[in-house]
Image (cartoon, rainbow, N blue to C red; front, side):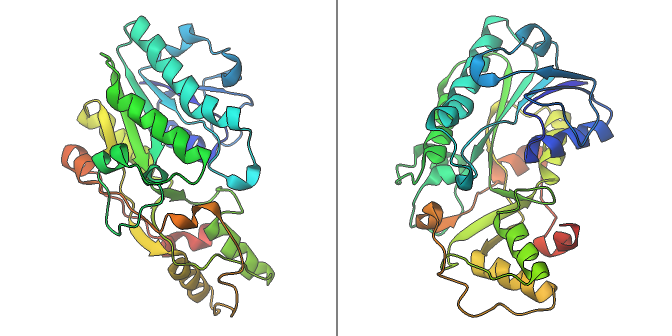
Length: 296
């Protein structure tokens, strides 16, 4: 099988590429810089916002995975045009090109459970819940992801398109300012910790499980559609911080909660219902946060 991954050296794209190396896929990589943590057959330097993508090479792949984007890391302060270009314009343009050439393979894009917005409901959300949510969106990343998901749900095509809605992905190699590595590194360096109130609840999945899910989708011949990828654990920030401290043989310092602010704190409870994907593929996540703390 020949696979193309759009986006090099990203957290998710690297995990997928490493797994595809392991299962013997021919691998073409597209991005600004050559991959540094895995093998590949061909690298194509491309700036997606400049529309320099060589579609003639892309269309030869059996599966095309769009694993680039912008806006997920609020601390990067990325340009608004970049967020909408990478998260909406580019994948929509690729969809249209695939239709024009009557592409016969599979195209993969990703959504986010942030698309639910600032909901007050405390339950797991289905794919339909995500698509019809009108809860306030706290940032442009959320809005752009909503736009892509609703396009995917509406447009007509003959090729196979899988759009996977993801919870929070974590693991070795993620941005050091995200919750888990930030907490682990601060404990190791004996640095002061600062968190929000810590009561927001999120669902978590280890990054290594996403390529396993993709492999299952390929093997099972999953039909086109939008699918929630349910995470293994649903926890509050306080619960994760406490878990990490306990695993590392220390206690949570007083006063660390409520000393930081984030734009996503209005999204109190985000968790996905993955029954649809499980029904068609049997995918069930297994990795727990406690299992991988030592890998950071």
